[in-house]
Length: 221
Length: 221
Image (cartoon, rainbow over all chains, first blue to last red; front, side):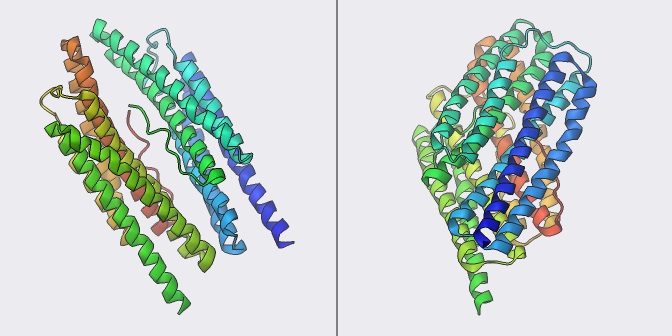
C-alpha cells in the first residue's frame, strides 16, 4: 500500500517532468518561428514564457524534496528522483536558450537576417528531436535509445561547424555583414548548446540504467 | 547523537566538494599555463586529469545517495545535500572546459598563438576567482557573497565581448589568421562558460539561503 502510494507520486513526478519538457520544446519551436518570420511580438512572448518554465522547474524540485522527506525512498528509487532533479535543471536551461533566441530576435529588430538561414532550421529540428527522445528514453529506462541521442549530437556539432564556417566566410568577404552574421551565429550556438543539454539528459539515462557514467559530449565552441 | 553523526557526514560531503572544486581550479590554471607556454605534455596531463575529476564527482553523488538513504535527513538538510549534487555537476563540467582548453592546445600543436593573448588570462583569473568564491559562499551560506559572484559574471562577459571583437577584427583584416584566431576564441569561450558555471553555483547558494530562485545569468555567445 505504501509502495503503491510512492509509485503514484513517482509517476506524477515523471509526468510533470514530461510537461516541462514539452513546454521547452514548444518554446524552442516558437522562438525559431518568431526568428524566421521576424515576429517580434512572438519573440517577446517566448521571453515571457520562460518565467513559467523556471517556475515549473522550481515546483518540480520542491516535489522531489517532499517526496524524499516524506516517503524515505529506497536507494534505487532515490536514484530516479535524483535523475529527475538533474534533468529538470537541463530542461530549464534549454528554456533559457529559447529565451536567448527570442532576445537575439529583438536585438535584430526589423533588420532582415542574412539569407539564407543556412542549416539553422535543421539544427533546431534535430535538437528538439533529441530533447524529446532523451525524455522518452528516461521514461522507458532505455539506455540504447539514449546512446542514439548521444550519437546524434555529432550531427548537430557538424551542422554548427558548417554554419560557423559559412558565416565566417560571409564576414570575411564583406565586413559590413559582421553584425548580422553574428546574430545568426548566436542562434546556431544556442541550438548547439540545446543539443548538448539533451545529450546530458541521455547520459543521465545511461547512468541510471547501467550504473555507468559515460561522457560522450563535452560541447563545441 | 544521531544528529552529530549526520552532521559529521554532511561536513565530510562538503569537504569532498571543496576538494573537487580545488582540483578543478588547479586544472584550469594548468590548462592556461600549458596553453600560454605551448607545453603539449602539460596539456595532455590536463586532459588525463579530467578522468579523476569525473570519478570524484561520481563518488560524491554516491555519497549523497547513501547519506539520504541511510540517514533520512530533514527537508532542510535534504536541500543542502541536493545543493551538493547540483554543485558537483557544475564543477565537473567546469573540469570539462579545462580539458577543452587542453584539447585546443593539442590542436594548435606547435603553431604560435596569435599574439597578444588579449584579455584571456584576465578572464581565466576572474573565472577561477568566481569559482573559489562561489564555493566559499556555499560553505558559509553567504547569499551576499554569492550575489557579488553573480555580478562579476558581467565583467567576464564584457571581457569575452572584447576578445570576440578583437579576434573578429584580426580575421577580417587578414583572413589567413582565421584558424589561429578561432583557437583563441574557443579558449575565451570556455572561460566564459566556466564563469557561467560559477554563477550557477552562486545562484544555487542564493536559493539555498533565501529560498528565492534568481536567474542572473543566461550565458553569452
